[in-house]
Image (cartoon, rainbow, N blue to C red; front, side):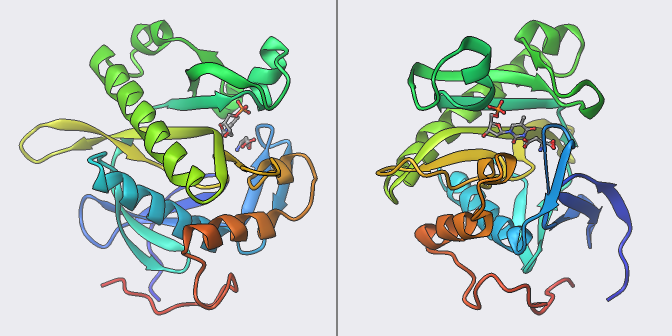
Length: 255
Ligand code: TMP
Ligand code: ASP
């Protein structure tokens, strides 16, 4: 296959030029990092599973009217997405205390929060993605006030929808992180849409009965069974690749 131009390499994904203007190819790696790159490893088959899981969740969100960058899956590890300008703000929604909020406010992990809490982090590896407020976002010009409103509203709708969907398959959506991008329409309109990925890399998912972790915390905390946990999420969603998680080079549908 002809080598496409690489546009960007992140910790878990590579972005290539797309086959037509305004598109990009998002390639999911098996690489995993945590604690701002201090911990590195690979999770065999993760890229294949996250490609599927993110596709599935983004398509479901499109169905309820949330615009996303997802266009179509190309093969086991790649999906075609719309080219957007990523807004450098990570939007985290939390339903149950875990991770950094538990540490910051000394709330035992597993405590249900009084209501869903939204946080913003500045997407900047050198600074370790610091927690920020709306004032920083608008003051430093990372996004306009109406864009912050749109991100907040979409993040809350994503939370409501995904919380219900996961509960239906016996999983608690503890928290998650989403990113948004600006889509530049030909008529000059600029639309904020959901971008990046939605997978167990950026959600906390706990079994509803046992509270067993089914997400990247298993890697962060050296708990083992990481691949199996991601596979189980895919299995419950009904999207485990037919051939299993094996990384077979499926037929490429790139035109
Ligand atoms: P935190 O508790 O570490 O702040 O994480 C909150 C949620 O955001 C959790 O679901 C993991 C996700 N997350 C990312 O996707 N990327 C990151 O860089 C961090 C720190 C968290
Ligand atoms: N992905 C982030 C990093 O490498 C953090 C995390 O997900 O824990 O560093």
